Length: 130
Image (tube, rainbow, N blue to C red; front, side, top):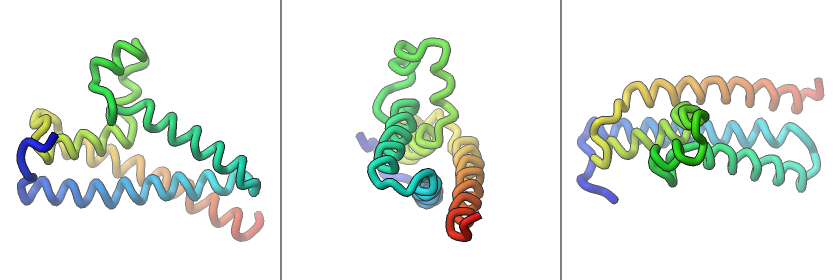
């Protein structure tokens, strides 16, 4: 539910988050595609990975539901790149104004940097046949 349109600062966060999230998720796909040459295995691994990434995030469920289902492991969801992106979107569209968008964006950028570097190295390894 959109409570109000984002402010100019909110739009800056939305655009930066969208770009970073797209870069991160495409890098995950690149990384997973280098695991095997079998298309069916790639699709299976990618589906499982995306399922886990979505399951351990607060995209579909509020934090209290995650805490009830995952128990003491619930804080892991706070470190998911999708949770961080969702938090920024919720803040920007005024659904939850108490969230800190800067800390979430920094966390998302850290995730993105790590995943892009891993994808780059795996892709080059696969391309060069090392």
